[in-house]
Length: 203
Image 1 (cartoon, rainbow, N blue to C red):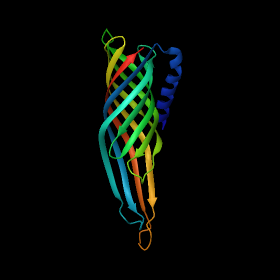
Image 2 (tube, rainbow, N blue to C red):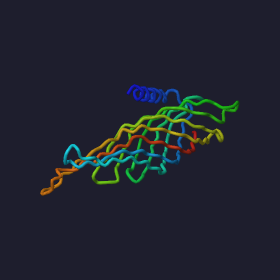
Image 3 (cartoon, rainbow, N blue to C red):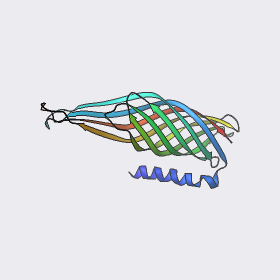
Image 4 (cartoon, rainbow, N blue to C red):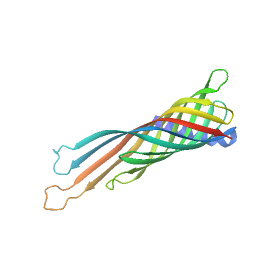
């Protein structure tokens, strides 16, 4: 919980300073691969000794993002990102606020290594009518390499880890004359990992 609170506080504090410090605004977009890790179970509500059917599944699919933000100076940037991802279990739409610290590699500073934190809200829509859609908090961090093509264009390749907070369960009654008094399905999204390539335009 402390790590989560620190990540959120750092991102918000930096974002609030953007209007007074910003030197270069930018807009961009990217595409990449996202891996989602799910856990779940199905439990017949018959007796405590009944073994639940448990599963753990990893889904790999593409995701898309658009973002807008500002370089506060040569070493700091803050931005907001919209992400979309769909797999066999859910559709996800997230809105996140991120902060990165950049380190120039070489005298020209064309190539930069970055590391930062992200926090936001993820809207998760399960691909089944039995489980409901939810808005959940998401947070994590990212790192990668950014290359300045010229004064206006830059591209980067990055890795982002996101800790998810989605956990939902539904109980369904079974009508008589069966002995089964119901059935409970539970599902959770543990985390997501993203590998992406993006292009930004400064103005």
